[in-house]
Image (tube, rainbow, N blue to C red):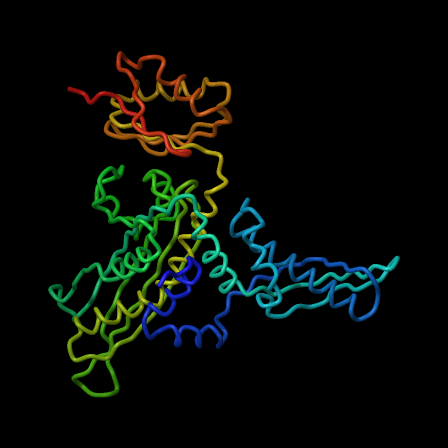
Length: 384
């Protein structure tokens, strides 16, 4: 049976396992993300009907404001079905001002918008409309403590595997730290979960992926009241989501799960899998929204293979900055093997390529390997 993109996305929530009901109950119990938006609405006429129509317009404007903050520059047309049911996303509101003048009713309200369902519907609506599927790098430091001894500390890849499977069901391309062509060693990338926000932001821009997910997952046994031989394994996962185009952290997610078991390692593995399942749908939403935020960006990403010496790379950078249509050229990463430059450029792509390949750099010619959308791969001959 064929399933639409939106239907397939909503099915993801049920594919996450038996933990969705618990999560929703927890959200309804008070852990609700609310965005308060102050908006105005107006309607022709006076009286109760006009007042209600003006409130409806104000609620629509509140939802539109949140949508534009989540995905700036997105065409309004595909979002119309969401906007038409704006009242469903506004939990409640307060009327700050209400007046009638010249046959027109005006209201000003503080609308309390439910962020989570709005984000879910935005992602479900826009996922099939993305020009290309996002590319995602997942780096998670995962630990299971099965006891107090050093040999009882286990590391694994359970959380990353669950998230990769969930994203893969939406045809989103996911890779790990062993992916070829990354500008850092696996050891450097593996250190990201403990790194600062600034370091993760710089790496998100350097790796030429659409989204970087950095996280920590830990599980440790706790004493359980059910018996001396049974332990409670409590898993905690925290994720940070970074947009590749500018390094902005667009989301932070977390989940907790507990499993009782006789074997701490087996219980820890199950607890981590359960916690990851709770995050599967939210992670997919976060990836789609991060990718949407990059769609309208006017910057180019240049990847240079074998840039060689710093002098040769600086000469190329100077050539780029000398082009009249170049507004900004920022070095994201440099090594003798690979370099990346973020370029704000207003001219034609063909003219840019002609300008940078028309000359040699330290006696070496620069060749174009690939130019797709706003990403260009260039290559110098490898050093002998």
